[in-house]
Image 1 (cartoon, rainbow over the protein chains, first blue to last red):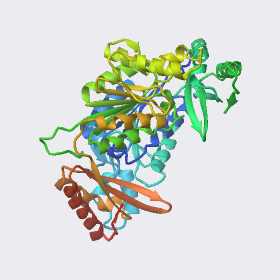
Image 2: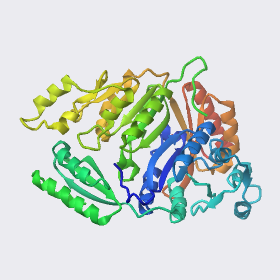
Image 3: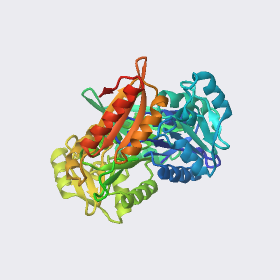
Image 4: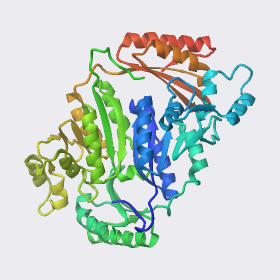
Amino acid sequence: MSAEPAKSEKIVTAAVIIIGNEILSGRTQDTNLAYIAKGLNEVGVALREARVIPDIAETIIATVNELRARFDYVFTTGGIGPTHDDITAESMARAFGVKLVLQPEVHRMFLSYYKQGELNEARLKMAHAPEGATLIHNPVSRAPGFQIGNVFVMAGIPLVMQGMFDSIKHQLKGGPPVLSRTVSCGLPEGLLAQGLGEIQNRYQDLDIGSYPFQRRNEFGVALVLRGRDASRLGAAASEVAELVRALGGTPVEE
Amino acid sequence: MSAEPAKSEKIVTAAVIIIGNEILSGRTQDTNLAYIAKGLNEVGVALREARVIPDIAETIIATVNELRARFDYVFTTGGIGPTHDDITAESMARAFGVKLVLQPEVHRMFLSYYKQGELNEARLKMAHAPEGATLIHNPVSRAPGFQIGNVFVMAGIPLVMQGMFDSIKHQLKGGPPVLSRTVSCGLPEGLLAQGLGEIQNRYQDLDIGSYPFQRRNEFGVALVLRGRDASRLGAAASEVAELVRALGGTPVEE
């Protein structure tokens, strides 16, 4: 099930590619995916898939070429710094079959920022982007990301990634925002399942999920409804609350 | 670059599939990937890729069939509960072309746990697994995971997933554990990049990553070396520390 607008409306889709050995080694806990996902909800873009891949050029190239053909937008994070393991920009150029070229605007900014002798080859690498790319502003630490075709290439450091994503988010052409309602209760999922499935069947334009939780010593379940039509969401949320009450629980709208 | 053993040793590889709309909507921050990744390091299995996919049967089937052919092990999380959106077990049966069958051992356990009338159809669903699967013990909440072929199917709730993963981790046949050393310092990456790249070139059996961080108001970079040979790691870590000192920084081994 997924939260779909009426059939006549095209759903705008996206994928995220998280590039970095540090995520696959478990050293770094990714938080960029959730940030991008929430932002895409706001602008009505449906995130359909995410991949976490290592810093290997062939893997980056194959993954971006597969996903940019399948989805309207692709967002990548990671691998655009100055060190030897930062190979995302070069790999994007190869994926698009273009050259990596010095960006005069970034070059000028770097020349005015770095002191004499500090702008070495490694730093100059960050002033390069694939030919034809549009730069994405970095409000935190200067070195920009870039957009090429339908692919947005951003930094891996969360604060920098967030600044970059926020600066391009409202350029994305999505549908109506994806709204959500959450009804929580202390009943077990196994008791709710049948009635919840029946509500999902009646509201096929909504996506209804059931997520058990434990807070302190209290067990419960969050029933989350997502969709683009506030009145349909409201009607379904009322039915879910009614189901909870009918089974002896106390629905709490979060 | 990746941390490889000597050429004669086969690298045992793995992929993770995180199944759940709640991750792609940004509602839930995944933590299972990092947990599995760290566990795989301990048993010498190289995690090569992770995917986050929605609760859509065709997507689950296509993804598991692609990845189980490409990697030695596949681990999935999510979608094995009692509600309508829990379609992982059924999708795995379809991916392997087998039936979903009642597991007598789980059925008996459920019969003795649930009171008369409580073991409804939704709960009984959790006593099913694909034909030929081996059950994975759930030390937290009864309903088991399962292994079929090289695919390990686990719950999405982190505490449950962790219990399941811990119970199968030592059955995995990996290589020597992946070790790591971290040298941190307050120097900028752009200053370290050239020397670090040279060290990486001399230690191609190691994976050297450079990860900038900000702690309170202090900026710095963690230089992380990963590999399977402790003495090679030690030698490379010493060279990295020496590089930091040569550039005027203070290396801190973490």
